[in-house]
Image (cartoon, rainbow, N blue to C red; front, side, top):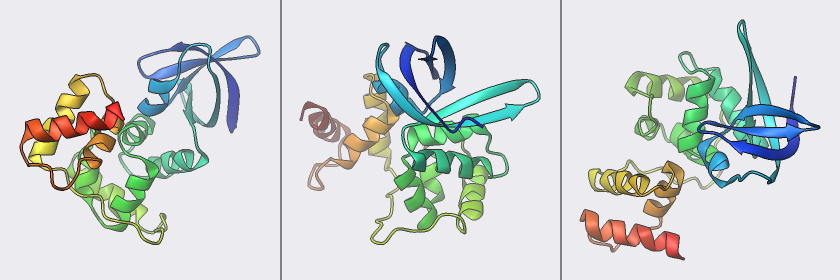
Length: 192
């Protein structure tokens, strides 16, 4: 079992990183936020999980131990494989997953590409007994149609889904509910 690795980012691919360790380049599949901020030449430390299949050995890496634990938990859900689990962690932080499970908000998982209503319900049901709630968690609010448009506009501008969601969450409550005003407020998040 490969529990962690430390090395230099050699290449940043569409869905993974090539990390050089002692002259050997390992392909490590990582969540989008990790991939987005890594540049060739950067030193990186990742907590890893090796997924063994009949025809492949695939290495998945995470910046935190908590993210790796959530990845492993998500893979125990019937119908969620390693790629979908990675997709969920590319869209939602471990904290957002914990809150969604604790508050039984299946719609939060529907924001993830590839997760339908049935899979979202399975995730909730199968993780409820395995994820302990932290005190003081606020529910993750379902995204409105207006904010969905803002999210789509921000991702079209090149921001990741995670960055776009953070910007939407930073929009002041007194912002008018139209798309243009909310998009301007969200863009202010990136300028600060």
